[in-house]
Image (cartoon, rainbow, N blue to C red; front, side, top):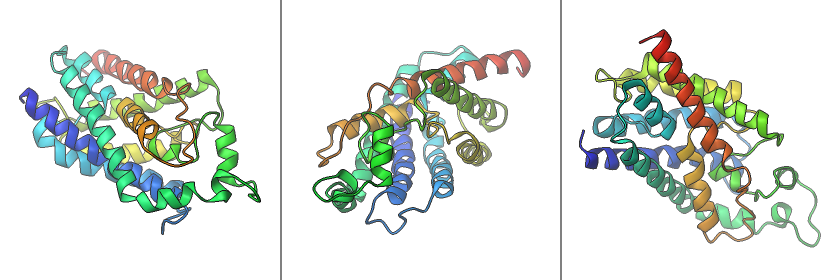
Length: 264
């Protein structure tokens, strides 16, 4: 794979991943959406299908890493680091593009949600679940969860451990079951397996932090949230932002280390 193929494949694939994954979060969250309050099951399966779609699109070009933790784990597994910066660049750019497309697709819903006094407060507004979440997630605006993750209980050690454990499971599954014949990315069957593993992680381990398990998936959209001209959007919770970046990278590295010791 050439550097241009890797960059293009990762940019397109990660954009599709975030468009569909962030899209299901927007569908469930925004007040004027037909899927409002569809629940955690819809989010878990929405992200799983997003992974599957993105892998099948990007796989022929880049091997469909779509996640810096996957890129780091494969580099540790094979000892090949030369293309890591190219993968990272495509993944983070694609994540930002995907987040911007979610905003475009739900433009009217974002505006309606963020100008609703029951959501953002104001004279005569009542306390709502959305405002309770905003108060709990200090510094997080009422739609930040569409773009990036946040903890239900803010405990640095636990939040970091949760992201490490979730990503460890994801990467161990990828390395043992998901790779293509060349071993440099996800294969056709591996894309389906990985998608189902992502659903499983969401259902089983997603409750504490929202399961970023992907630094680009969290950081790229968080930057977009900070930049977009959304009314009453609130903060981007930068004090928490390092956890869904560092945790997945540690989890991926640990999975690769175990793979090299136990499976290679």
